[in-house]
Length: 309
Image (cartoon, rainbow, N blue to C red; front, top):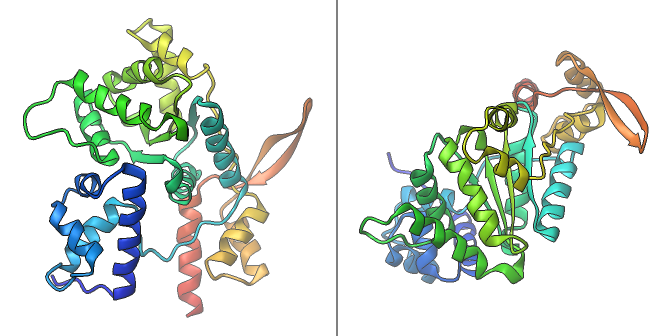
């Protein structure tokens, strides 16, 4: 398949390359992160695009956070809460956990914050079912750290990551690890080492479904190796999100092209909102109707947009 890309799209990806170069320190590290040769990055930056395929442009672009997706993220209550958590963690070098149900908006908010603050030493990685070595290798790639062609011991990989953040301590770096509930126990325990080495020099947010919270609490209860220390490093606190109120749904609909206020209300009600208690003061709460599956909301909005075409 031949993939065509416009010059504007290519220029946008080149801008991503420049941004990553500032964050990581060199174009060679950008090439490492994108898993391409240094020559490819050089040719892209110099404007020698003739021999670079669309697939190569897309590979580099996706590795550096470029997206041509048309779906827009609105500034909802959830997004503001996630942004405040990230901002507070970064400012005060905190280790924090966000744990809530799938589809409530954790990933979209965290990705958006990371993209909007990419030039402020904010780094994002989405986890898979990685044991410690696989996790550290992927993390090194994301950070543009060259691990060499020969075998590197796990502890050496960990120290490469530690040193990466120590060198940027004056910038108060923030690492965001999404879907952390998928990580193996050995990977989760490595955060103890990261905290010990970089306390007060960086911040870390790990996010996942309630399974992340349950895994850590169960590990503490069963006295599994390292879990009490792990929970201690994160302040023994698990932060949840609220979902989308009627006002949030209106914002999401409007920014994505569904402007009819009656239809916006119909969409909200069709998703069967539930009542949630939210604090409005030191000792006061109020009940608000929310929906907590934003992926389903996205599908409904896209379907309504198709009908309107």
